Length: 236
Image (cartoon, rainbow, N blue to C red; front, side):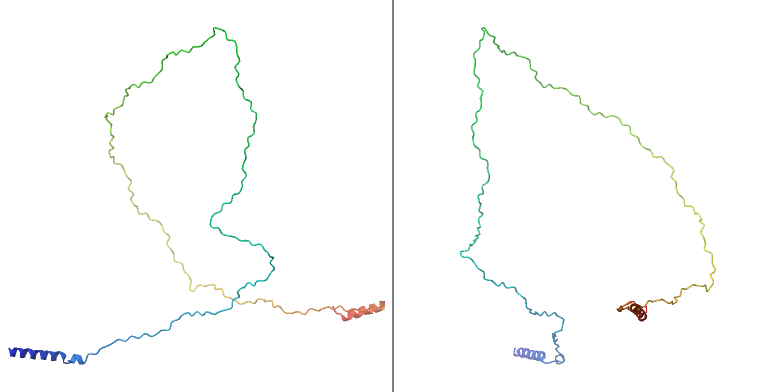
């Protein structure tokens, strides 16, 4: 019994040492951790800047004015109930007016009656009256009876049918014929040739100005001499 206990103890100790003893794989095992880092990336964004600016606000400035005392004051009161105001309307007025009316009355007047006088006596006399009495009347009704109806049977009769047979027909076709073209053959090519174009250029032109010169006139001799003098000096 003691030997069994001892052998069990030895086995347990060896198993414990074997489990906790470092092996070759434990020595060379490397743990890898991935570290992530977030870096801010610049991106375009809109910046709104509030710039205050002066705004003219109209302000009512009261002006003093004369008020008579006592002065009438109009007070309006709001009533939340419908108010019905009686408005007089024109209406007809009936008045009884007594008017004399003539009414005719029968007044019996005595008159002479001869005796004996005629008296009419009505007597009832029977007479025949026609009365409708229903009487049964026999009516003839047609009873359908079978009768022979001749039936016409159509018999199929053969008939001729035209059968179209294709026939080969030769149609004359124009065949192209050879045409001799000399090589190289002349070709007319339009070539642009420069030519002169008249262009009008404006330029300043001096225009002579005529100035009137007053000439004093004293007599006939002086006037004739003055005229000749003026004509000599002014060239037209």
